[in-house]
Length: 80
Image 1 (tube, rainbow, N blue to C red):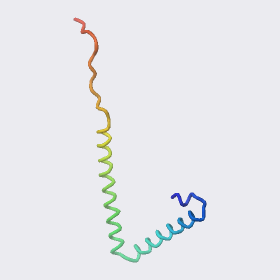
Image 2 (cartoon, rainbow, N blue to C red):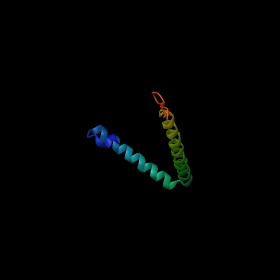
Image 3 (spheres, one colour):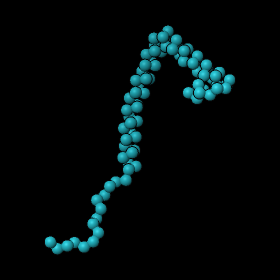
Image 4 (tube, rainbow, N blue to C red):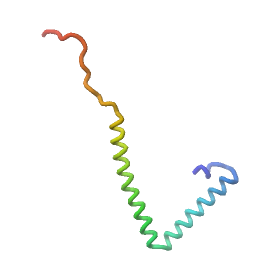
């Protein structure tokens, strides 16, 4: 992403190389059915991992939060 923002010759070359790599990957996936299935499986697996990471991070947040304890009242009790 940074290579598309920068305006130097090197950044432009890197950006073009990245785009060519993705085009080549797309062409390979279209021409090879088995590779396409494997790539789709990896994407599905990553999607399930995202759910697990969400659960893990939610639990870590809970552990990081300070527990709220009921505060003891200070002072004398009045006889009622």
